Image (cartoon, rainbow, N blue to C red; front, side, top):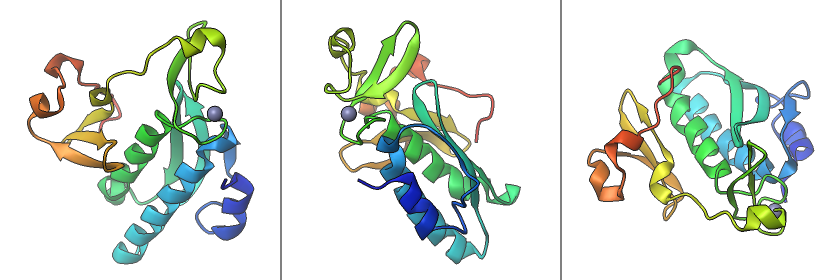
Length: 170
Ligand SMILES: [Zn+2]
């Protein structure tokens, strides 16, 4: 399993020693994949990205990174992909899991790393993993482990009133 220490030593330019890591090691593989994608974007667009923090927020992985504001969309697709992946990946061990709630706190865990009560909680439907963006509804298609813009929400079973909107919209 990839660790955050390994990422720091292999990608010190994008993920320096100073990065605040406030999540468990199970998500390090997701961060490593994000950095691979981000590096390709950086090379293609002659720009830079530097991660400031990786943290668990409302049960999901958030990657805080700095880059030129004009590059927002270039990276936002990959930032969202990382977040969606974290919602189906155990934060402890990196194996498949899903979001559980204990005492009002959300956390993504596999069955092994769940409490008996959490094990009773079923996964949310796959269509919940998406976000409205300036380019359209960006949906995480678990079958291909990637995100894509979906024009017809009915095609993925998504009721329109369930669309998740964020004030920091992309
Ligand atoms: Zn686990």
